[in-house]
Length: 234
Image (cartoon, rainbow, N blue to C red; front, side):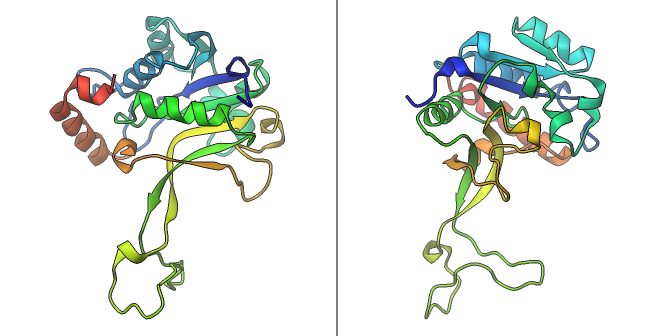
């Protein structure tokens, strides 16, 4: 392996400041919560050492959940929990946790598989690239802000057929990996702009993101229908 797992910390970061779905992280979700689901999946990992796993939170309700699971709690500041744009504030653990690398796992994705998290970690450990980002592979049509097509339309094709389109990659917003040392300079995943991290492909069904009330309701309904064993993929 290129990287030693002892040099990697694994972080789930959460806060209660969601404007669209108030208290989203602790709002009852199919008999549990979104953040409990994420923590439990990481604890089931066959790769991630528990000692390297941190729950980065500020509010007492979230700290209590971390203590309940007996995991490391990084008590982020009020400023960090409220920040929207400053990498140094949002990821204030960058110079306080003694690791070379970090893998960040989003807590808003109830269908993300433990085995996918493990595969992401394995690939990151085996690549010399300092950054990695989860994406979805798409065959789709896209237009720019001026409504000009930017997709590569195949020559001589007259009908829309996505099967013939070149593959593009869309951010999945679920798994991120970065060197720790670049964060102090305001970079994340890569120290060039635009960032060019290694891409890790995930299945779209795993990254249904809970960001709006309708998504919360939809995902909760699907989660209940599928049942605990299938949702946890253990």
